[in-house]
Image 1 (cartoon, helix red, strand yellow):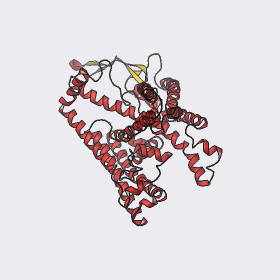
Image 2 (cartoon, helix red, strand yellow; image 1 turned 120 degrees about the vertical axis):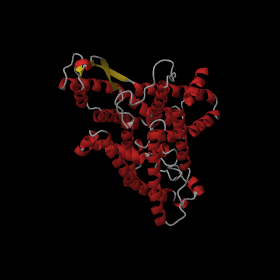
Image 3 (cartoon, helix red, strand yellow; image 1 turned 120 degrees about the horizontal axis):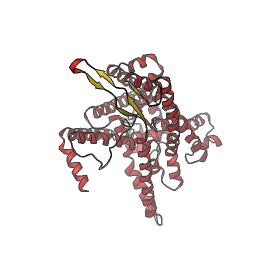
Image 4 (cartoon, helix red, strand yellow; image 1 turned 60 degrees about the vertical axis):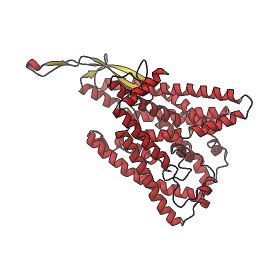
Length: 446
């Protein structure tokens, strides 16, 4: 306890770090306050009597911190920006123009960021129209103004709200602590934790021996979090030797290189993206079945029961497949081989060039298998938690997108805080070892 208090004192002794933390907390407060401001033309009392969103809409509501169900001005949250970022990233792998921008360094990155912002506005406008249709079909009694006026005003306000949230995220990244966009997503997810925990506590206190079961559930949750941290940080280090070379002439000649470093390849280089892609596909059968009138068929019922064996088996296999697919997109062994050769580096015992690329690709394929299997297990853990009697809202924190995002963002933020401490010659946050975020542990994704 004394060490914790000392570390907190050291954190607030550093003026720059103190300002960054206070700035970040201030913008997070603005974001959470805005998530409770209801759209003009909506009756909050009538809205509260409606049915909570399910399926993929419930997932969006969790990421938005409940703002989606409250018809808030931030109802769409930051998800349109994430969708636009993913689209631009995929274009950078397929379209020559975007590939050229990626190679232009900082100026090219600024152009891609600007394109992402413009695309975010377009995506948000379309999603705002869809959200308007959802409100009119589900909460028609809550809309108290003319439909045409409500459509226009809500699309404008929702688009402006998402752009403002995007701006908040970028400001946190620039002047605060941590990755702003990821931090806002995590805040939205964590905002649901107290309510879910209280719901589980109430459920267990009404059963015989319920508190003992609640303690067991919390202990298991800690173990799952520890295992997820291991998944996020695990890397396979490949030794890289740099050749000696002489730089300069005469008295200024000096020897460079000749040292050994390591190329860290992440066990889970795809991050949380395979689960997001797999979840999107898993919602398609039920959505299509509802539109065409086959919602009562056995096939569609299987894909609407999130705890069924068939659903989770397909979900698991999709996560494994998408892990390999997305890893192939974000990690380019050929590019890594060229970068090593250009900088005078080589892997001992492996010829530079094509052989190096093949060697890296072989290792990446091998380590991706256990990483993808573990990721698939994390994805379906909430279903197992529900099978053991845990409430649906609390079970979501046992795995899936929510847990991976929370663990990754917390590690990244703590790593930045520790970097500030070490830079000022204070002790780090841990007695031994150093905290590694997603970016520091190899190739990372959005």
